[in-house]
Length: 316
Image 1 (cartoon, rainbow, N blue to C red):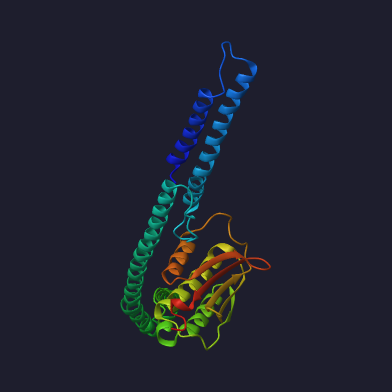
Image 2 (cartoon, one colour):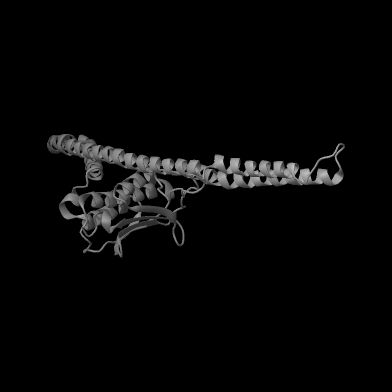
């Protein structure tokens, strides 16, 4: 029954009962007698209480819907608001749930297109860095080698310094290119790519351990790329923000898929604050239907967990 008819029925019942009593045994004197005033006040109070109860029950689903709308976050999909209450409230809640489903689907689709374009642009930039800038610096190194062989003794130290600076720049460009386009992931697979990632970050002042089994359930290329990018972003956040000196990467099969864990011993997460890196990890997790959680590590630091269900491509 709609809220309108609930209130109308209650009021109509009260008025009909009052009219029947007034036409029957109940009368109102002039002036009003105390017992007559008591009956009128009691009837009015009963009608008001009945209206308040009906409104409270009828509007409760709308209050729950308001709380659900205030806490809704497309990056944190959760249960839908329960459909209950009068017809108007039930129709509104159903419409809201349908709208939320559509928004989450559209966001996932647009995020997939954006991340796919991002990966293509990363591969293009990495290829240009490797093929153009890398080759140019390699040629500069060869030229400096020839100059160093013919340079006077007093200039060889400066030429050597130029060689070291060029070699350092070339190594940095190669490292950036590997981060933009993980060739080892395409060539050797996820396990080798994660071990290589741990070794790369271990050269940047962070001791990174890894526990990555050689045998994993069959994973799609998209799932492998998401697992690799989440591990990469987790370690990047550790280096930039946590102040940690130790970290670890674990990848293990679980009952319903695979689970990735990136753990550090840093200062932990800032309460209520998520940067673009964490939002990017959440968007990637949504693309493959995975669950991403961040929380404190058992002793100190941060745990980043990504659980990929079998339906996302593991074991398919």
